[in-house]
Amino acid sequence: MKKLIMFDLDGVLIDSISNMKKSWEKTCEVHDISVPFKEYEKRIGRPFRNIIEDLGIEYTSTIKDTYDKSSLELLDQIEIFEGVHELLVALTVIKRRKIAICTSKDIDRTKKILERIATFDYVCSPKQGLRGKPAPDQLLNTCAFCNVDPSDTLYVGDMDVDRQAAERAGIDFVHASYGYGDVEGGVVCKMSIESPIDLLKLLD
Image (cartoon, rainbow, N blue to C red; front, side, top):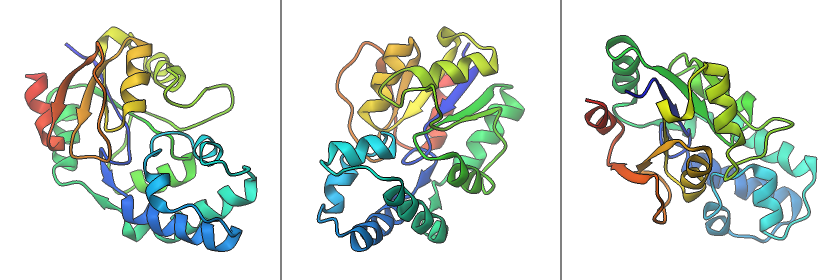
């Protein structure tokens, strides 16, 4: 039995694509960047700095500040996927599982969003000393904080960087196919769900 259910945030519990698109467009306007959102979108799931550098843009803290400020101002653009509240209640109250968030979104915005969703046993955002996905650091840090072995953990994500991080951490992975990306074949990529509530069927 899996004791800890770990979730990515964007594309798994929340639909934030509109928020990201408008925040990126504002960032491009302010900093004279000519990279279309579709290129940014391909890299969702990685830490913001990694995305910027992968796009061939010189990273500066002011670029991140602009994006984060715009994203906070547009939090009303974020929707919670149908079935998320019911899923989390079932996991914690009925099935008695620990739940955690492991996301590339910064902690301030993450906490603001989670106020609308639920209280989690642990929330892991990018922090000093932990490499971002696809490295396994954040996932292993979350397991350690929750005092649960990776073999007793399930990670739900929608991007291939999520799958890679889970595989490298030795954690079973569930692909949220309703999210923003596809995944390539991997030894732990055996399960897929078409909606959040479908996860309960995998835990019966």
